[in-house]
Image (cartoon, rainbow, N blue to C red):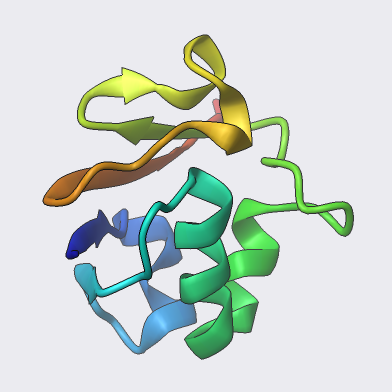
Length: 94
């Protein structure tokens, strides 16, 4: 099973500049499992995505195959083989 996690420019410093991470998590896997795989290698990136309780931070959206995870099953969203996971942090400023 393979899953590709796309890293936005704002978070690339936390994973050595990688634009994408190709993971091979076990099956079945949820979004929590995918992010646990990311955290095992890049804990600083994980802290930018999830809070201390393992929940997505308020201003971070994660899409699984173009569907926003909060509209699905949240962190329990099933991630199928070949899925694309996109992390989209909110950007504000003025």
